[in-house]
Amino acid sequence: MTQSKILNLDVLIAGQGAAGFAAGLYAARYQMKTAIAGQDFGGETAIGGIIENYPGNNEIDGFDLMLEFKKQVTDLDVPIIEENLKSITKSQNGFLCKLNNGQNIDAKTVILAIGRERRKLSLKNEDEWTGKGVSYCSTCDAPLYKNKNLAIVVGGGNAAVEGAILIGKYCKKVFLVYRGKKLWRPEPILLKALEKTKNVEVILNNNIVELIGSDFGGLQKIKLENEYKNEREFIVDGLMIEAGADPRVDIPISLGINLDKETNEVAVDKDQKTNIQGIYAAGDITNASNLKQTITAASQGAISALSAYNYCLENKN
Image (cartoon, rainbow, N blue to C red):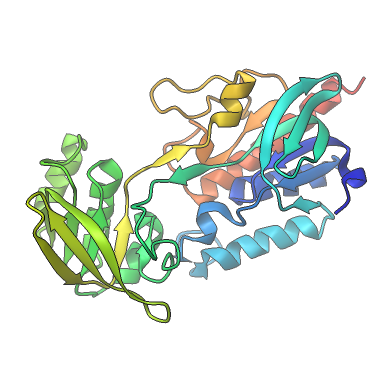
């Protein structure tokens, strides 16, 4: 794609996930000059494995679902730039957006759909085996462990406890591993539910220090190390890493966009508007919903496109 094709846009959408593609679809249908920029195809959905809770699909791989999202957008001739957004500054026509490759784009409005960064364990083969035994979304992947003998969830917060309880409904045995002496402030109601889930065993004061398997078969075993440096191995069917995720807020902060004081997410109203006129945000980066799922991200993307369209109409001169 040449820079000259996209020098001036009605809307630049940052992010190739569900929120970004949905925003692109709606913006194109509103006949807006639109482009999507981002390097990570499909966002969280694309790496979530099999999805069984997206309406209209009893079962679909998240990567395939995002391919369908993308095709809808490209069929409407929305260009997709395989570069991440580096910075945004205000300009005479709206906003000057610079990409990592140095390309500059003038846009009347911007939709930020850049999601969150999953916290990882930083272990060898963790990235390579994502989708091959390693996962970061209990809600997405819990049904994959039906009747399995063992699954391990790592983390000590609400997400990890919820994940362990959910996987426990499918899996024969679940271990919840946390490095601390006690779980990190999960909600009391979750602790009560965890106590009632008899096939979940909590292992405290332990870290996962090694992933063991093969490039062909993916994850097969994990090695734990306790506070006394004693090690033990578990044969596992899966490792669910629920150590949390952080919204990507460097660009919003640089632009002066307000963040939610409790969650550090981009603060938006019901129309996905931020406190900066012409800047909208959708998906997991925002405080619009506690439910971080493909369906909510897509709905927020659609809403943000409508808001951007109305803004362009109101400020067309």
